[in-house]
Length: 135
Image 1 (cartoon, rainbow, N blue to C red):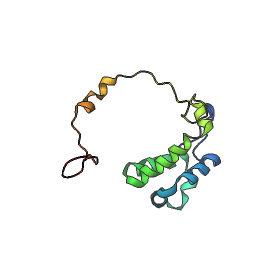
Image 2: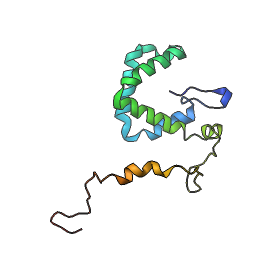
Image 3: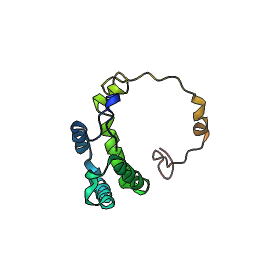
Image 4: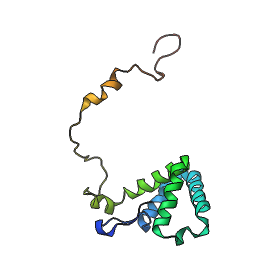
């Protein structure tokens, strides 16, 4: 899903360190990841690895559009591990560290964009209210 870009110093998602992170982070999503991989292999036949890069990309793009929850989970797991990799962070101009506790400086935004949300009445059930009165 993420090819290597040597010119930018970016590893691909198939890099061994990133693959190890993907495997470690699948957890409860394993059934959907297996479903996604099985669907990709069924679409490609037995020779997915032997396809040219453009053919693999076309196959994945076609499948991903209709892959549902399995596609979303596979994408999330791969991209999560990819953007945790120190080499990727450095290539993107970030420090190779967790965002907290130091945090990152964000430019001030337009807080008025949240006015519609603030002015909307609550649409959730307030679990602090006990039936029959009181809190």
